[in-house]
Length: 562
Image (tube, rainbow, N blue to C red; front, side, top):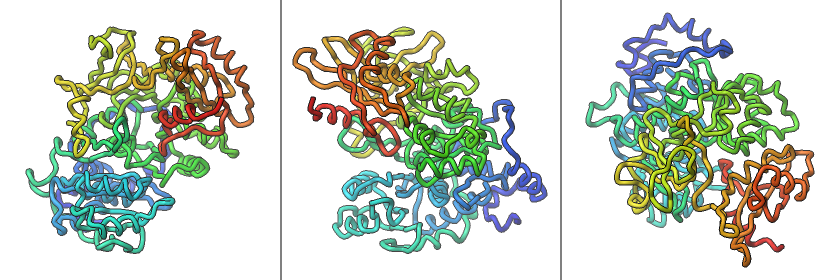
């Protein structure tokens, strides 16, 4: 490999081909059991420059492993450069909107970094989007160029996009590029974005700056339509580097990413956390537990981004054994204390980090340090990340609360500048005059400054005039050894106002009864917090990313006949 072949002259000023033999040897060595000292933060403050910086430091080190494909940092930089060069020829420039509709793949990364190189704004869309949802997303993001798969699962994007263009409802959409096979409804073959090279980045003022928008992520929430959350280059790099530090990520780590890259957990958390540490992303197109176990075992993955439902699915696999996950060391998860404990002890990720955050705050604003004792990590979501301030406000009086007092969580620091598009109408209600985000979540700051999450403000159950947090009840029920997952909600009652209802998924082979679970609750909770009804079920309503759909659970409980 010589310098001219890679094209990016400035990138290769420090490239030493003689170092490649040693770098190749390092890439095959297993991750050390003893962690090194905290890493030096990268100098770059835009995403493409970060890729170039890491490629300059370790060109032959694997950046991405996806199936049988392995791309080094130099490979990924070259491929992103090719995409950028063609986008520039297409007339794409700083601030233009580039849509990205696809699952986890090397191509997704090439397009993401290629667009970022020009200062274009990437709008990643969910692969579960329907035609009507795509129409809104393309309109709201004002996408001019769309890179897309032909389809995913039951969704035929080819048909959807052709219908939208024929109907004239997406007038900003000038160019469609299909990157996973035949052109279909595409205007250009993706092969044309895989040749050439960007000789140099656009000059300052025409290329991205740290304060420019990197991505526009769409997140569901309290509004009827997805909210558009712009997030910047500099914010994504700096906050994610700190997330990686809390995990103890090192360059030799291989981090399995099964969660979607189009989600904030992926695009502005896992991706820059791994990249800023020069480690390796191991991509799974979509989470499938049997395949995930195979990948962990075959690649020797040392890190994993998981969720309680994903952890449960892995543990329920007939071929699961701790021997298959013995290389896992660190990662992040959400959930009740029992969820975090299961991930650490039963899945074997001993240094798993407990987290709290939202898309508006680059995925996470609080993370437990990986080297805290497990008992400390399971009881809280960690202290705020560097540069983040968290405070707790009484939702009724508006006053700020002290340590140990439960109220609404607000945070500032690494935070979106505000919703964009249709959802900008919500800005006045959710951002304070002094720059804090009103999360709608309940929690308390502990004496040591760490955050304890207590549930959604809107999901509090009012039974006999007393407020009950469904999260508190769920955490207690999940301590029963026969319980895998639990969802708690309220239903209207003429006498008590609301009754507490719990839906329980048992662990494989277990057969708990409502009476035994109710007795278990009474040993851990006040009598008024014990569910009036406990229903055993095969599954809970979950989002595609494994979160409990509380609205659907409430509807399900209300519709049930007792």
